[in-house]
Image 1 (tube, helix red, strand yellow):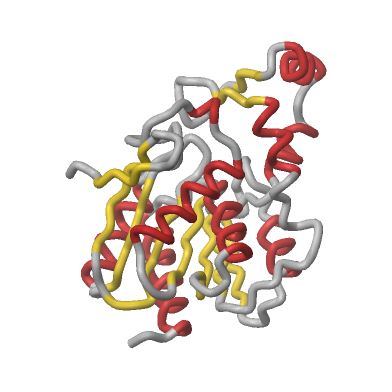
Image 2 (tube, rainbow, N blue to C red):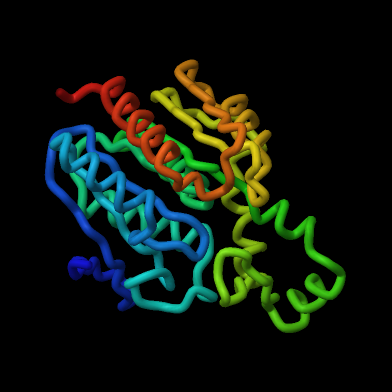
Length: 252
């Protein structure tokens, strides 16, 4: 694992990232909740885009992976700011955002805030507005912890460590919801979604495409696909979706 470069933020924290120069449009990968840029999909996509000669960037949000800070201090707003800082300072030209799970929410926010830079979007089990469903699914004890302690520790099926769900995360999520109104993005979009995903209901992909103003939206439902979509067939499907989206954007 090569050492990442570090992008210094105004508050003294540093965002770890890897950037490979190449053709436009570039690809920027936004990882999921408590995930990082060393995941299977991020690395496989980097290899594929590098072989194709395309610019590629992956990074870790505050409190994730090799970036500084604590996970519990993060929020959708803060992690979106981290992504925008990487976009603004570490990449050039039009970009196709690839967002995995929470990264799909971050990526859609990026498209709304930087429409002049985000030219296409690929979602992998994209999970916009997931904090609304998270709160709705909480038990009375969990909601009590949220109010009295400011956090709740949720067991994770993907890690031995529980997710620390903070009241800050839940409250901030409401300020970043994207599915309550139209999503004014008209670039090419490809949404990959497993139908056996036990974290993000597969109907979420249909809700996203319905809200997007773009007419160029493909939804690929993988009947036996889980939340990770990290099997070889899934990776091949992802690479094809990303490169097809890039080709539709143009640039070479």
